[in-house]
Every structure is written in structure tokens, then in C-alpha cells.
Length: 128
Image (cartoon, rainbow, N blue to C red; front, side, top):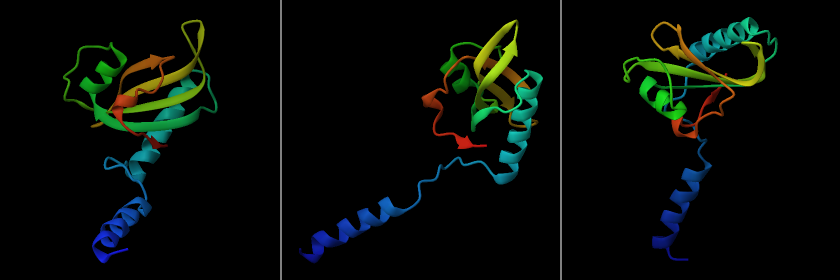
């Protein structure tokens, strides 16, 4: 194979071998804090061991658009969305999925969504 064709092929293979990381990956300290918030929220809903804990940083406008509803807040507000599975007791019902939206500035809860899948349009989440 000529060298002209071999160089781009090697460059492509090298790019494929690099680990896939998200450009918006969460720091270790943030992951720990989100994990503790998720466990506290799950415990309040009588779930001791939630599974599939993942989180993503986004804006409130994108989150509200993905779920189709939510309280009136500025769309540019930076938020974290925590998604988890389990058996969450609320309003006399048992829900299997729980999405918690926290303000990024102070980790205060804004809104929660029950029984909704993780919205793909928010990007790849980070395991917490």
C-alpha cells in the first residue's frame, strides 16, 4: 500500500483507539456531591438502593423541552439532571424511574419527573 494512503489510515485507527470521553464530563467532587443528593432524594421516597444512577449537566430550557413540562424558570439556568431507577413511593403510587433536576449553582432541587425515561437529546450522562 502506498505511503500516501497508509498515513490517513493510521491516523484514523489512532483516533478510534482513543478513549471516548464526554466534553462535559463531571468532576469527581461534583459526582460525589450528586451521588449524595441522589441517595438522599431516594431515601426520602423510601428507596434504600437506587440503581443506574447517572447525571448530566444541561440548561433548564433543554430539560423542560425534553420532558415537555415544568415550572416557569429562566431557560438559561444551568442544571444537573439525575436519573435513577428503583421503587419510589410518592402520592400513594410506586414509581420505577425518578428524574431529579438540581440547580447547578447551589444543588437545590427545581423539579422532579417520575416514570420518564432518560431523554437522549440531553447527551451522554456520567455514572454517579
